[in-house]
Length: 433
Image (cartoon, rainbow, N blue to C red; front, side, top):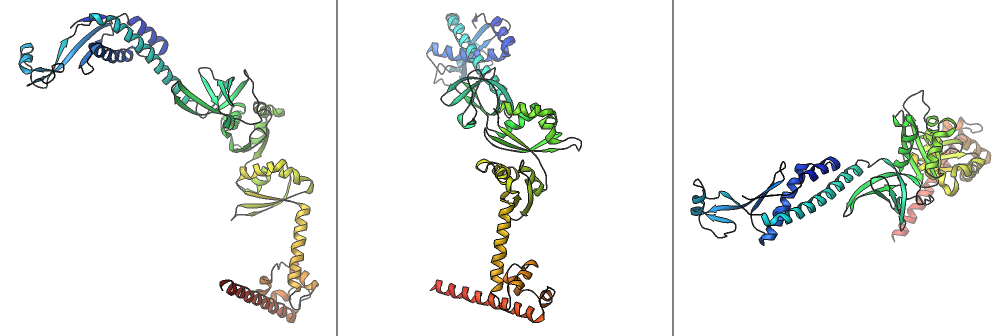
């Protein structure tokens, strides 16, 4: 066995202190690299070599390993049992024997290889550490500075590295210049040949939520919970909040004294408008709140279709709908309900048209004049079907309708339904032909 020494220990110890890379880990990597280097120098990639680098002295010990066999087919890899017994009396087949290797001429190779390995290992460890550091920030908001523009993408300096703000994650109305301070939401971290790449966003709803956490202590400690956020990037945002403490006003906490808290968030979002909405499990109440700042006069819900019909004052209609339908669109996204808005005058017009339509339908019945039709409509009868299903007693309870008239109206309604049914059947037969 021949030893060679390279001055590694002081360097490895310094790297361990500064980079956090264990000396033993580096030594092991260098040993593997030295084996490859020695094989290449010897011109035989299949040599079974073992290299040990002493972590206390820095000395290299190299061995050539051969397997004991009955008949040798590869002298570089095997040794006959006869020859092995001469060297080691207890040798037996399949046993590995180590032979000293002269590596005096490998000193320069060993030093160069060790240097290359150390540099490469440091790069790999730094990339791994940076990747782990970046990955720990996924789902968080980080501070950065606009470093440069690459096409439409923005490169953000975040201290230990750079992040990319792709055009798809940018708000169209937000404008930045090189050197601007910026808060971004970390979406994901990707491994690339040049190292870890952090992908950040100014579009993600979680950016808004995290900005509220940073500015509002009640949101940070979950006294006030942000239930949902919807936004049209760069222009308007609706935030539904719920207080878990009866003494804490959810919206007031988020707005702050004289609006100081929400102003900081609006400033970070370059002037985007934020509507704070009280969350409620009562759908009607939630929809009314979501349509703010418009005032709602009445609301009807269709639970089955999850749709609502909302009536507002005439002067509130444009406010409720918003520019290009923005307010009602965001309210629908926030609540998960379809919202149909009408003004008070539109509702009255619709009701008048409906009454006139029913009047026309009822006055076509035998024995039903205009006054009788008005009485029926005011009493809640809306269709001919409802009249056909009514009883004489029900109709006679109405003003101006006696027994004979009641029976006449019911019979006339039934006759009308039969006529319509027959007409429908006739149309169906013609269609089949």
